[in-house]
Image 1 (tube, helix red, strand yellow):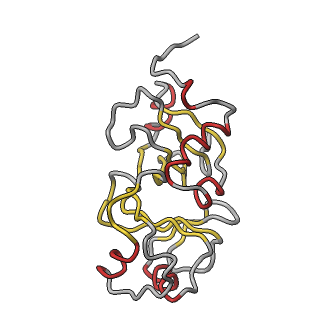
Image 2 (spheres, rainbow, N blue to C red):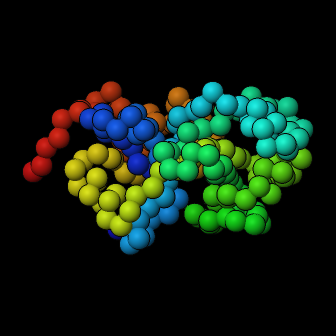
Image 3 (cartoon, one colour):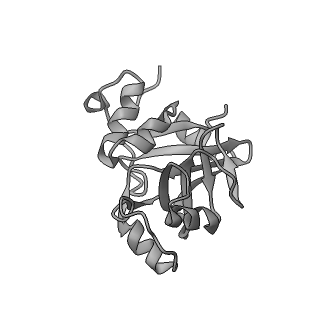
Length: 183
């Protein structure tokens, strides 16, 4: 099973406050574990405030009020930039031919100059799972999975992302039950 470039949709029974009502984009999944970014939980921090804190000028006024996201509970002091197109940055994980995850400051500097990727989602922290951990959570019905659509992440408002991902499965989010069962 490889869930790279898939969405993890938290089931209603998810009790972990880090993941309740979340949509997570899986950036990497292999036998050693998985790494994802929660894409529907904004923080109170704006890009303007973040860029000021890290001393990078932000020239594009359209980006100033974009939210910085809570990407997950791991390394919450580290920035992660989910973006398309991939481009050529110092430290980028290519997720698909068009979507990348970058941790190097050069992508933020380019965004500040108006020369960065067309679409960006900046987060603090990430979601991580050890070997077999995500598979175990899936077996316990903690998540629904569906192949990711980058337009859901980059083109929709934050509050519309989870329902849109659920619709990719052909399901109305209001019909999801918190109960768990096995056939």
